[in-house]
Image (cartoon, rainbow, N blue to C red):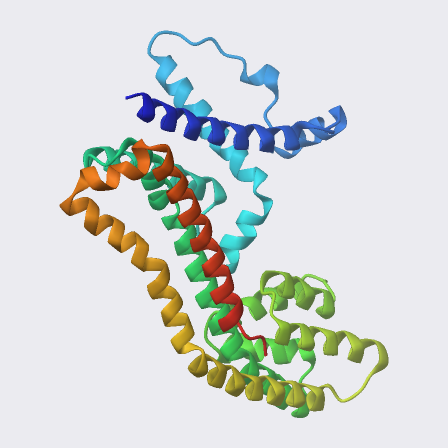
Length: 323
């Protein structure tokens, strides 16, 4: 029971410390003028308007509202989280996404307790389930980036042909919106709408580059900015960029084929210790519990985790060849 209480207390302390650091970062240095601007723009409610008396059955509603407000403020601290979710094409707010993570933490800890796992594993189970939304967002973002990168050469070629046929750059961007599928049509559509509202085309493309940080797209944005200042044949430049991107894709395919064995070995080596631990725990739990009930066992677990992380980093550096 003492180990269980220590694990829960450590988990709660770390979560509270993280939340406190974010709130301190938000509040420090904020002047009264900034607070009044937040009230006027609706980002913050006036404290005088929010003062109410809690009576009888309203206590539960007030507590739930306070918890929701707390998560909302915490979600607004992660200014990059909204951009991260947008890059993955996820139609979910940062507040709701944090709710998913916190719910996963609680569900994972409960599942560990229901499965009668050792008490020190409860926070690990919570972190495992709570990280699933993050892994989901990372996978969606990575898949969207890969699809965008694969569509970019065709898009650049389409813009070049549209420019040769007499279209302006804005009109050529609109051709991509009409003729190509998502996600590239969505991103270029946002840039097209921005320039319709009066934003210069190069600035609209730089905004797209912030949403989709891609090296090949950066070449295109830079070429547009240079052509706007000094002139030149933009269609020819886009044809050359498209050719370079296609050739790089071929090299990337060759590199992926050559490093497939190393990547598979890394996955097996990383999964094997966890699989062996679960297998031995199912057949002989008392034998595995020595890793948590003795000082030597805890040291062995710590060293094993550190070595696993170092091995994963080394394998990633070996198979990750930049082209």
